Length: 274
Image (cartoon, rainbow, N blue to C red; front, top):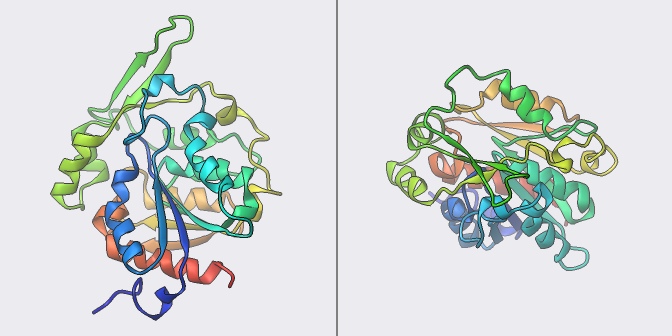
């Protein structure tokens, strides 16, 4: 039986911009991008700076805005009058928020999929500060934090997901071949601890970031940040629609790719005005 992504509701064609999470790249969207493109939608899965197939090292990325530049540029390059469906996963929700703030008129709806969802009027680092209170000691298992960079006066920290952590916290319900692929392709990501964008209280405003339609997709079997914490992030943002995805671990694009794709099309059909 054909899924909703290819049935009647999918006959409206949408423009999707897909943003990966920490240490990942555009490659993690290969299943969802294939499903959506097969239904006739236009899909761009983006690599953030020094991620995926993007050249350069994490310690060479000077700021969070530079890290998010591929998304900011993609939105700015949309034809006049065209608006995209933004989909951010995990840490990609932070880049989504920054892009919405910069170009609210280019966004039809923003979908946060088990994603960091900052609040207007609070620093973007508020998400990580709140999450730090949720997790216990040893939470990150074999993940690696290193000090990198050529300038000892300005050291930067990078973070790399460990295979044990990925298997137990992120990919526990996903196909094993996708976990294997991920362990081969993840790259270190810079931690933007002292970044002005992450620390500024006026970076996200209710007038711009808060004015765009937003939907939060809760991964109901997420073993990294809990479904309760995901719903709490959504509650910081008045008017956010919350949808649950049953059977999804932290990686809905792998554990429930068809159901996730169908839900994205359903959301797009609801919020994209003809």
